[in-house]
Length: 399
Image (cartoon, rainbow, N blue to C red; front, top):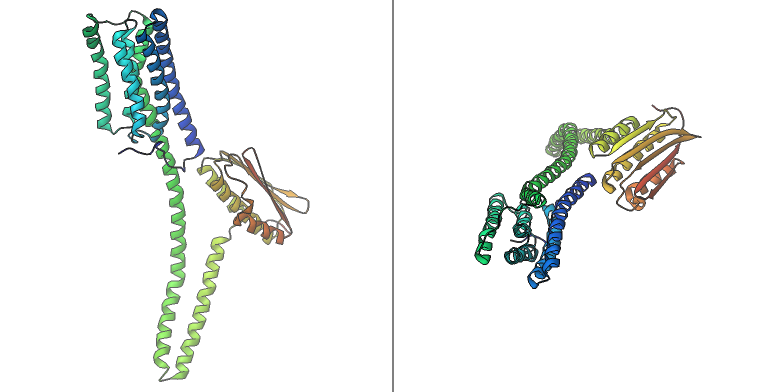
C-alpha cells in the first residue's frame, strides 16, 4: 500500500539528527546532480550536432528525469525499506527515464550512457523497498541496462561497444556504484535515528525508574499504617455494641496512626521534592549533557538563606525542564554568582524553537515564588538563544 506523500521518521528527532539527514540528503543530491550534469552536457552536444527531433525529445525527457530524481531523493528520509510515496511520484520517476532509454536507441552519440537515467531511478526506488524486493528491482534495472546494447543492435544493425572516452567510462563506473552509495548512506541514517530513539528511551526509562522508586518508598511507609488502621477500625466496630470505652480507645488509636501516616507521607514528599542547590546544578549538567547539549557551569560561593537556596534550586530545575522541552540546544551555560545584596543565577541555551515560555504555569509560578522573597525573574530570547536571569536577596551562607 502507498505510504503518505513524504514518509517521515519520528518528529521527536533532535536537531543533531536532523542535521545528519540534511548532510546525507545533500550528499545524495550532489552525486545525482554531478552525474546528471555530465549526462546533460552530452545530451546537449548530441542535440547541437544534429538538431533532429529525436535528440530534442531526448534532451527534454532527460531534463524531466533529472528533476524527478532530485525530488525523489527527499523521500529517502523514510530510510531503508521505509515504503514508497504516492504512486504518481514513482511513475514520474520511472517514466521519463524509460523514455530516455528508448530514445537512446536512435541516437548514435554516446549510446551506452542513455541507460543511466533509468538505472539511477531504479537505484532510488530500490532503497525504499524491503530487502528481497530491493534486490529484485536492482536486478531488473541491471537487466534493462544490459539489454540496451542488444536492442540498439536490432534497431541500427550494429551493436556499440565500450566507449573509448575515459571520462565516459569513469561516468559509467560511478553510476554502477550508485547502489552502494545510496544504501550505505541510508544505513548510516538509520543507525543515527535508532541511536536517537534509544537516547529518548533511556530518558523515559530513568523517569519510570524514579517513579517506581518513589512508589516503593510510599508503599513501605503507608502499607503498615493502612493495615493497622483497617484492623483497629474493624475491632472498634466489633467492640462498639459490647464495650464502648474499648471501641473509643481503638478509634483514638486509629486517629493517631492516621495522623502519623500523614506526617510521614508529607516528610517523604518533602524530601522527594526538596533537593539541595548543589545537587540540582549537578543534575542539570548531567541531564543536559545526556540530551546532547554541552553544559558549562560557572559557580562561586554565594550567601543564601534557606528560602533563597530552595528558590534557586527550583529555578535550576524549571529552567532545565524548559531547555529540554522547548529547544534543540547544543550548548547551555549556568552561572551562579554573588550580586549586591543577593545571588544571581543566569541560565542560557541556544536552539530555542518555541516562543519564550513566560506565560507558562512553570515560570509564572516560579516568578511568583521569587517575588514573594523580594527577588526577580527575567527571560529573553534573541536569534534562537534563550536566557533566564533570576535574582534573590540572601541572608547567611550557603548550606
